[in-house]
Length: 300
Ligand code: UTP
Image (cartoon, rainbow, N blue to C red; front, side):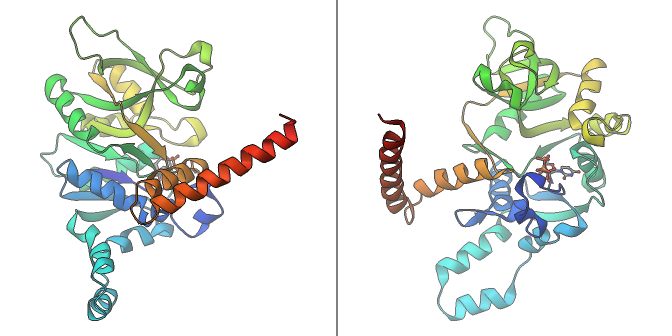
């Protein structure tokens, strides 16, 4: 499986000037470890992590820290020791370098050399997109077994939100077919509500047929001068390659911007035994204080 993590993270500056966004903690666990958990659950033993020279901390996170571990062990801090070791028991991470941030498509292209010769398809997980609960990759693998080709992950969103996303143009399901699996005719990036071909938007999980590498080589830089993976997928669709979307019915957090990241932290913290109860109490008080001050200001 491939995890592209070489982007600049401009939506999260200034923090991402020196801290890769993939290492920002959701409660206490970096996004990259959550992605490694998801990949391991889907059966991966090896992750090709695409990183940039300025983001070396990401690979360091997968290294063992013998001094830290022996110190925790000597001090009897077993819970912390288990937390530190958890990532090493999930997957083996191998680094793939992307020298310059030339786009997600380019980053995926860099991972070609990390695949085995007999891997005719591979999964891509965007580490700033949490797709919950884990398990959507297994559903996508089932779709690939039935239809072959490439499988993407989609979400239904309210109509008024489509302009924030890449929106799928989909074929209608045949009668009796699983309505969550639809053939993709094309994609439109951030359309006006009136022009949106559906309310199913793209999420950061891809099961790509190996032919994508050839398509990427034939893809010119698009929006922002970057090589876009969606342009390469469009090329495959035009050439008759089957592309399906699996419409996931769970939740999602965009860790790539402060707003989405804060929601993820609150969501995970509310479910955490240590932090949940007091956070809930504090939030309830905070929100009712807010309601009172809002009422005073608006005269309600
Ligand atoms: P994003 O566009 O969400 O990430 O790319 P970004 O470019 O880091 O962030 P902004 O837009 O500047 O805030 C989706 C994923 O693709 C990776 C990113 O690291 C992210 O995980 N990516 C993007 C690369 O690996 N290389 C690139 O050249 C671009």
